[in-house]
Amino acid sequence: MRNNGVMADTAKQTTVISASPERCFQVATEFERYPEWAKDVKEAVVLERDAHGRGAKVEFRASALGRSTHYTLAYTYGDSPLTIAWRLVDGDIMRTLDGDYMFEPVSNGTLVTYDLSIDLVIPLPGFVKRRAENRILHTLTELKSRCES
Image (cartoon, rainbow, N blue to C red; front, side, top):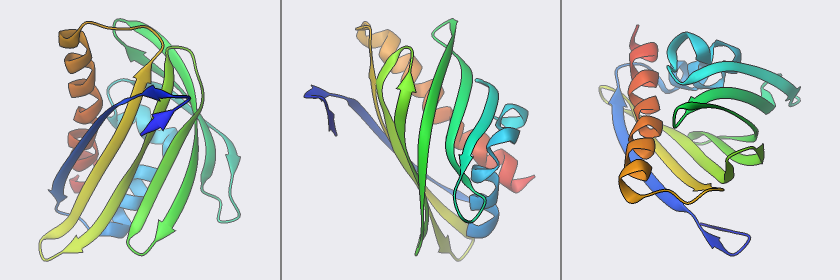
């Protein structure tokens, strides 16, 4: 993905969650509850909702790279399969933070695909970027634990 002519780092991960796509979608859209299960999210405030009452614009405060960061994401939703997509509206340490979740029914639950594109304002050494990417992708593991609980 490109944003303002800058190449962002991308990551994609999949996992099977032993819960229905609807349950996974519900957990992933309860933004105010993220601090209960997403370790790095300290606060999530829904600023705007869509016609269905779902978060359309959400402001987050999170810990990243040893500091506190703020960013606002705009969300859109699809229903076949269930999807949640987001794009960065505003952020203090990133130019891009765009991605999506796709929830597809499989025989033993839900196949979840997590796609992410991120570009930080400050250049980072490769090993620091990889550590940050691993923390971000760990969110999928945290989502799995929450949905299966």
